[in-house]
Amino acid sequence: MSNIQPATELAQGIFASEPTARRYVLSHCEQNGKLRCPKCDEARVYRLSDERLRCSRCRYTFHELSRRWINVGGLSCLDWLRLLKLFEQELTANRMAPQLGLSYNTVYKAVTTLRFSLLSQALDAKQLLTGAFGLDLGFENGRIGMEKSKERMGSFPVFGLMEKSGWAFVDLLPYMTAETVLHFHFNFKLKLERMGNIVYSDKYKHYDALIFCGDETIPLHIINGRDRQAYVDSLVSGFWRFAQDRLRQYNGVTSRRFPLYLKELEFRYNHRNEELFPLLVSSLCRLVPEYE
Image (cartoon, rainbow, N blue to C red; front, side, top):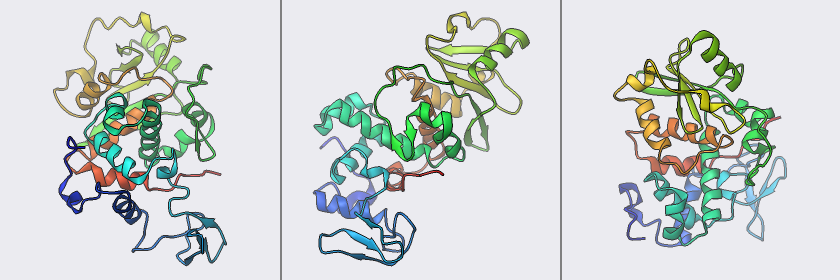
């Protein structure tokens, strides 16, 4: 792993072994130096003879990483940290796999889990992870569906893009559908542009653009991109330029996973002046939400 350059905070050698990597991971799971019950948040937990933990209030028995995103996929803590470092450097799963000595499918599942952990922190996370949106995204009752769905999605979520004072906001618009955006285009002359299956618009209300990712069931070929320029394409910097360059580098964004990529880009942009690695570790160590 000589190609991975540890950041200053990592000088303690967390990449040296699994025990050191695990200690670093657990430090991101603890509150005030202690693990709490992942079910009821009780601080009084005790260790059993088999090294599992038990909550003294609800009696839930768990492992140190139980119910956390990092517990999905079966990777060791060391492999997770190595993967996070490469993710920080914006490598694709295809490029990560040989460097990590793992299969592409294993890395893809891990990166998808990480993206879910980032999305789960968004203000509209509950809307995206529950109901029809959650099922289309592949999330149900705290579980991620990694298989590639062959069925048509129930809907293509539409997002509003907005930037204020250097902060990007990627808002799910639950009242909006891809068909609605096309209706506005045909009947109210809303300017649309395409990048493959990704469609984005001119300004709409207080948003800089609307955006969604469709598939062959949407008549994307009728969007010709002629006439005037979309507002976001006139900007020389900012979130859209940041996101557009990266969306073009991804190997075929699917409509099903598109919200994960958008929320990742929102996260990266809003933390662009910070060291991402410890933030990624903290995100991965969060509890997987289970909505009623």
